[in-house]
Every structure is written in C-alpha cells, then in structure tokens.
Image 1 (spheres, rainbow over the protein chains, first blue to last red):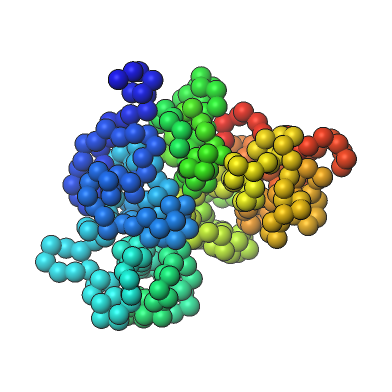
Image 2: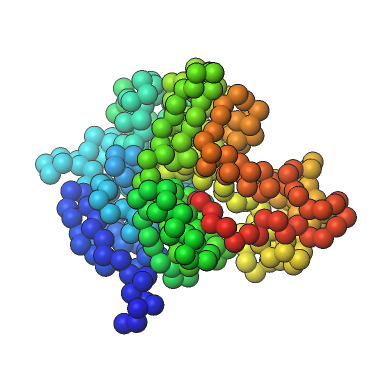
Length: 163
Length: 216
C-alpha cells in the first residue's frame, strides 16, 4: 500500500457500549458506517445521512449526536452508546418498555434514534431542571423524524418515563 | 467523499502549523456543516485539522459586563449557560431555535459563524454558483430563492448566512474571543448583506472562494 493511501488510514480505538474496538479506519468513515458495516451494530439507521432525520442518533459521552456526521477517527477515547447498549443486561431500558407499551412506532426504522434521542433529552432536562411537558418533549425531539407519523405515541411514551 | 489526511491538534500553535503546511486544509470542530459539505463534494480538503479538543470551551464574564465565549463552546452549552439565559435571553432563544438538539450538541460557536450558506445551488456541485466557483453564475437569482436574500444582496449572489443567532449577537453587548472575532469577519462576508463585491454592477462576487482554512 502506498504512503499516499496510508495517510488516509488511521488506527483508532473506539469505545462502543463499553467495549473497546481497535480498528484501522479510512478517515472518511462516519461513525454510522463503522457501526453498521464494521461492527455489526445495525441499530442506528441511515436515513438522510445529512444530520436532518435523527435515525442515526447515538449518545457520545452521554450526549445525543448524529452518527452520520461524526468522523469515526475523531472519536478516539470517547464513549459511544448505541441502542444496543442502552439497556442493562437483564431488562430493557425504561424508554424501550414505554415505546412498546404506548405503541410508539409503526415500521420501527426511526425507533432506535428516537429512543437514544429521548434518553439524551431526559438527561438534558434533568441537568437543566426543566419539566418535560408535551410541548417541551415535541420541541426537544424535533431532530427525530418519523415518516409513519407515530409522534403522538412517541410523545406519550417519553412523557410516561419523564414523569 | 475525497480522501484526506487527518491530524488532531493539541494546541493552537499546532493547529496553525498543521494547516499551514497543507494547502487546502480545513479545521474540524463539530463537523455538522463541514462533514456534510464534504459528502456533497462542495468541500474537498486535503487535510482535516481536528481542533475539537482544544481547550477553548469556556464562557467568561468580563468586568465590564460582557461575555467572552470560547470558540469551541457548543451551541447547546451556550444556550443553557446561566449568564446567557439571565442577561442575553434573546441569544439563548436564537440558539435554541436553530437546528436540532443533536446538532446543537456538536456545533461550536466559531464553527457556527463559519458555516456556509444553505443555498441549494451552492450545495449542488452540478450547478453554477458564484460563491463556489466565481464567475460561473447564480441560478438562484432566477431559480429557487424562497429563503434567500431580499435586502442587501449583490447582482452576483443572493445567498444568506444560515445562522440566526450571530446577527442577534452582533447587536448585543457580548464580546467574543479573538478567534471568534476572525470568524465573525469571515461570516459577515458569507451573507451577502456584507458582500464585498466592488460595486453593484461589477464582477461576480468572488471574495468568498478563499483558500484559507475554515472551521466546520
């Protein structure tokens, strides 16, 4: 391999859901593509691939972010949590249970992003001391689109966990 | 996306040196605009200099009542800062009205000032655009310009700057760091309200197609 090419490959250690992965990454690879294509973590979905739909939402050092706009080589040493790592070993995350209970999805494609985003919202609201009424939930979840239109039940599910 | 070399800067001097030695280098912070433009082929840097971990992420209150906002402060953090909420609520509201929670968590203050226009012709490399390719023309003047400039544009470009909050900020008493001040100067020329084309009837606006590193 020529030096021209090796300049575009970087050894990187990604910490995903508590597990470290030593990878040699193309500098162009987004976190979303590495999750899905290299690590078989296909929960985060590729919707728009431009940071507009939220289907790829993960938690980066505890804060929600669009995995499609994160270059994976920049994340060395940071903590990534995907939908696969959100729950504990024994039980689903309360948001996952609430989404089932409230029927907060139809096709389910946006659901991993919705739930990761909602987990971030709950933490943000707690840190800011903000009460999450329905309007506040709608505003804070506006970066997650659902083409099936399950918004009413998504709000209800998040509200059920927030209160 | 074109291949590029990646370098993480550990201090400001290192960042400057890393960009100076690679023509066409770009600074990367949040990446919410730059990475997107790289996917679209609008930006094709030979090297990315990652400045996202530089310690420029504080908001300081100044003795004269102003604020000094670090270039790497995240939009989310600036919006919920107690001093901003108490003394500059319009700034907080403007920040929170932009983008989404996910994007605000990554977007930085300096990067927000440096972001490029959302004009659809600028973002489509198959179309002419005076901002992207000076002299090629401006289809937006006759085409899709619903969200573009009504006032203060030039004959060559009707693009607007996409940020809502810097305009408020410039009219407030808040102060900025020297790096953000440089960003502000660049950002001003991005919006065609500040177009520096020589005269209203003169040559296509070419001042924005520079080779200097830009942040994301």
